[in-house]
Amino acid sequence: MAPPAGQIRPGRYLAAFALIVAVLYALVFFTGDGKATPKLGIDLQGGTRVTLTARSPDGTPPTREALNQAKAIIDQRVNGLGVSGAEVVLDGNNLVITVPGEESDQAKNLGRTAEVNFRKVVTALPAQPQPAPSTQSSAPAAPPGQGGQPGQAGNTTAATPTGTSGAPSAGAKPQGRPVPAAEQQPPTTTPSPTPSTTPAPAQDPNAAVDPKAAEEIRKAKELRQSTDPAVQQQALLQLDCSQTDPLRGNDDPNLPLVTCSEDRTEKFVLDKVFLPGKEVATANAVPTPNGPGFIVELDFKSGGAKTWGDFTSANVGQRAAFVLDTQVVSAPRINEAILGGKTQISGQFNQQSATELANVLKYGALPLSFGSSEAETVSATLGLASLKAGLLAGAIGLALVFVYCLFYYRALGVLTILSLALSGVLVYAVLVLIGRWIGYTLDLAGVAGFIVSIGITADSFIVFFERLKDEVREGRSFRSAVPRAWTRARRTILSADAVSFLAAAVLYVLAVGQVKGFAFTMGMSTVLDLVVVFLATHPLVVYASRSKFLSRPSLSGLGGMQRIGASNRAAAAAAAGKVTSTSVKEA
Image (cartoon, rainbow, N blue to C red; front, side, top):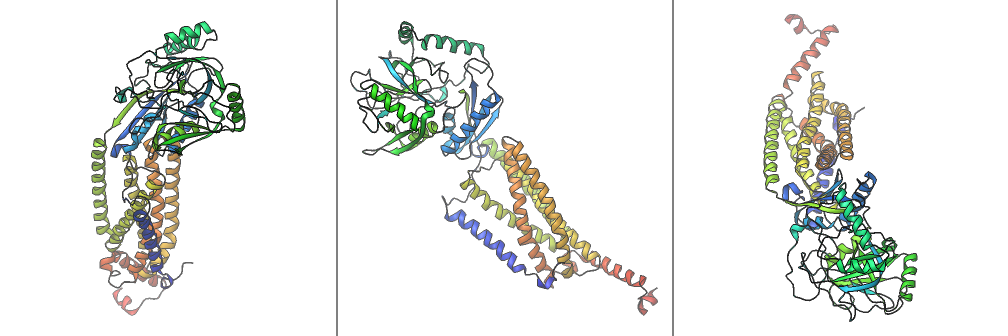
């Protein structure tokens, strides 16, 4: 049984709603960056969309399992790099990465195979001078007698062997990851030896099922991973470091390797991998202890630390190459045995580039190699035009709803409009906060979800008001009808919103791309609809029923129902034989 209307305290519900709104907007304005605007998606603020095409060593189509694993790792990299609003979608044999806003350039660096392996340097030669096709950045020179090894930091120490990786200077592309050819620029720095960002082809001809690619990889392996020293020397002399490496991410760790340094200034013959990258326990970017800049610290697992210690003990005076995706990023000389396994990669890192390299190493290797087959900058012009059109359509729809509610429900229609406005206030604050906390970005599909949710919210009001009219039609007054109508209507409202939320949840789980944004906003709006209906709309109707002014039949919109109710009461009394004399005369 519902409590009498006099026992309902609507002020408490309204106070709870006001408290919720106050807390939300306090979080909006006084936490984080304090910007009271939601994050916008790529179609509303522009950004970058990169399509990565999978390549397998033998040219066969990649397995679905490998593609899903690669997608999961790139998702981890997106989170680790702090790229907000990025989306990774599997499209056939391609991975499509979209990143909105100012951080969009980082999307071009997420497809790096990124497995660091450790090989012994057998032979090192300076590379023939080649016109560098990619941006070069500076690094310390190698020790004498090391052929100008790029990234050579100098002598290692007993505790922390230190080598430099191909790290870019501030303003350059992050080191050790590919950029599309469209992004590559001629060298603009001073002639000092500098490590580089290794380019990937902008239009990758090595598609996953391309037999020519498989043949190219096979020939490269035969020549550059031969165990015959004569073939190795021939490959070393013929190797052109200015060309795209077909073995990138496709080398066999159990065979020797002829390869280049990342800055393309030195060529190597390397022994087989003695320490695989999976033995790296973690990698972190930390400030340089005795100077400006940052370094990357590598910590090995217990087995890896022992292997590293044994190798350095047996190869004092030799060089160990840190090989990242088939290319040497550092090759320091071992001056003494290094125990404990803690190793540093140093160079001209800024905080961003060091963090990016550390996270790529930490999150491990992709099961496939990828070529950046497409990288495009998306303008927000078309999206903003569509947004304006969508908002205009939503405003017209809201205006029509307002006119209908005022005409049909009168005072209750005013409460409908007020409730919708309160719902908008609540939704906006939540949008800002989830954008700040979980990186949610509002796109056109999300806007569509909010517009659709207006109908869900208005439907809850209509269910309540129609049940209220039914109670008045049965002969009850406005005030006494409200608690009975609410008791019956709220079950229907809960059921309807539960169905809408389940539909949105299923759509979110099964959908991909922008459809997820639509499902998310629709589900979120459905939950907020319950908050508004229970804490705002119902108490406001209770207040209206207790107001002599608003409960007048001419204002409440219930006059017709009250006349029908009075007629029904009279008919019921006549049927029971309780007819007044006035009624008899009228009969």
